[in-house]
Amino acid sequence: MTQSKKPSPTRTTRKANGEGSIYKYRGRYRWQLREQLGGQTKTVASGIEDTKTAARLALARAIADRDRGLLLVSTEEVNVGEWLNRWLRLRKPHIQATTYDQYDHRLRAYVPKQLKEMPLNKVKRAHILELELSLCDRISASTRKKVMEHLSAAFQEAVHQELLVRNPADRIKVTPTQQEKERPKQRKALSDDEMQRFLEAAEGDALYPLFYLLFSLGLRCGEALGLRWEDVDFANCEIRIRQANKLLKNKPVLGVPKTAASVRDIPASPDLLEILRAHRQRQDAQKADFGAAWVHRELVFTTGIGSLLDRHNVMRKIHRICAENGIERFGTHSGRHTVITNLLRAGHLPEVVMRVAGHTRTVTTMGYRTVMPEEIRAAQFSLRSHLALADAAD
Image (cartoon, rainbow, N blue to C red; front, top):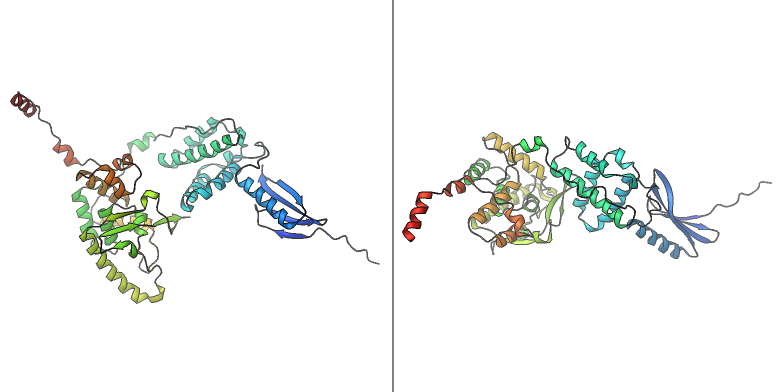
């Protein structure tokens, strides 16, 4: 006679990693949530409920507590890498997907494994200073500053949750290295002559309307590449910024503009609208040739088949035109610097230019102002003339 085996507990729900599990156990329902702690998978929350619904609710509450960082049993069991992952999870609902992707990339790429494996409460300021020093030969001062800001924010959250006494990354000062200081300064606004030379060289290129727009409105490149035809109001001579082309995992995607102030309406000049009309006619002919194969039918600027343009390819095209025509190379943001500089030189109020640029503070707008050589020459001061005028006034 074969002895029957004792039935094992029935598993009613099995979720993906990090989402917990619910099991039927002795007529009741057991739930548990497991996490990677200290390099091992450990149960951080569990319980038994009379009904499956109650078990699901309890599990949902535990997941919410975990996402808020409230299920850490001991900082001895949690290393820096695990805490950074938890901090990223806390930030994710509050930032754009592209911003989250940048945070995640910097922390993965530039925080070394040795530091990530350290217990959270063993990290000292010296470790963070050593990290900043080690990154000097790898990345720019601006990127190092971003990495330090992310680490400081993550450790500060641990302080707020009483997991750390102090923030080891607090107020780490990042300064350019001597080599960075000696490099030529990055090009910003173009002079009228430089801008004219570039536009003449680019005329006839498929991206010429994009270049003309960048030097006319001072849009961020992503704003220009996210522009739809419905956002171009030919009747009222206005262009509306409602979306942007961004990079997510190094691929272009459409999303919301950078800030609330970036959503704005900008007056468009007749010459710009004339160029956009001609561009639309050429694009309509391309659409007719491709038919249903055309990808984004509503966008103003696309690739030759209607797909999203990658800003890196726009930059490469600018550099190629510059190289072929003996023009000092510049980037897509130079159009923004140039327009803001020209508007301020023309006497427009900083608060007005701020609105056109989509900034939230005039100090940011003024930071885009480039003083041109001819402006400095015009400021020549003659002491003799000044004194003669003073004598005449007396």
